[in-house]
Image 1 (cartoon, helix red, strand yellow):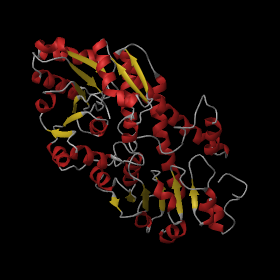
Image 2 (cartoon, helix red, strand yellow):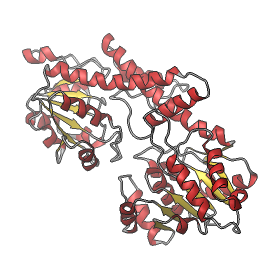
Image 3 (spheres, helix red, strand yellow):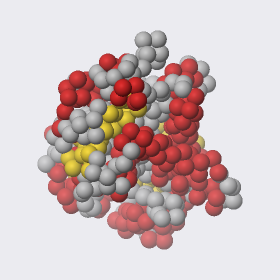
Image 4 (cartoon, rainbow, N blue to C red):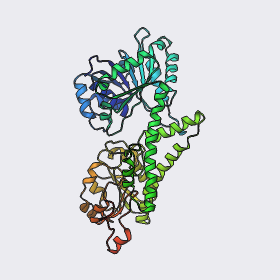
Length: 463
């Protein structure tokens, strides 16, 4: 608990903003969160989280009950007494790939109009992922909107490094906190705000604003690069008859490389990585630097999905009138977020080719159905597998590992599994009688299975 609670406002109660608001309240500050979406505010006033994030409902209930967290639809209510105001609105990609910063500008102008020129200084913190130079544009927008408070409002860049599914944990136990500012007062305010976290040993980095802005894009682009490298490596391993999981384990044993983000699969999705790669590439291009590596990361990400689709076609020949089940619909486990989820893109491709597609996800069923109305939704994994000619693992939810494989096989029309996340072991799938196509690993032999011969010798091979 901080010794000196601060008045904090958070504008935007989405995945970033709501987690930030709850976390700042949890470490002792007085927080008001604002969102223009009336339905979302209505839910929050009832202490209901509008999206799935582990740990969020409990902390929401706790901090509202203790009076440290409140919600409003009016920015004026939030900024009236605030020492720190966070901008956490969305920055979706335009058709050009550039970040759409209209919401950021609108919020900056609304804040400027509602600040009293006689009040003390306010630190305006940009937490949404934005291109370098945005802080300067925000400062200019504030000055034009309300010159009386221009000298009392300081702009800071404080990018978030949250992982959906672990966002609350990442917020309360961050690996690093990055603050970009250009005044001693702004730095001191941010130190006081984050002291409960830094006192526990969290790495705290201070830099200029543009460096902080670029660091966020650079981090996400590099993580995407590692994933795409692993996916390209999977294609090589499939051609060579090698095991990409073991290759990645060997690579990851080198501390210069590390094992994280080297899991091959259908490719990355979600709101951040695809959008930020495009935005970073366009940003570099605008400064006169061609960054072809980022375009290749995007291409390899699409290739990963195509690889999964190719295996389905290989196993089923024609897709018309085939029933295909998808296990997992969110873009990653631990969230109900289906934005740019590989599973839904795969479902769209399959539907276009005449297949009937049914899916199941522990948290994202409703969001997936809203996104893709032609997708049939099952109530559990076994219903999703019932009568299917192929079952595809799209999201590596831990509960899928515990499925009864013999029961799963018994309800399927064809015992065929395409594992886009290498969730199952080849040994277990062979033992249960499946035709099995993992990613970047040798398959459980298809023709041998049909002949009734031993499918694959897995005793001495990779699991």
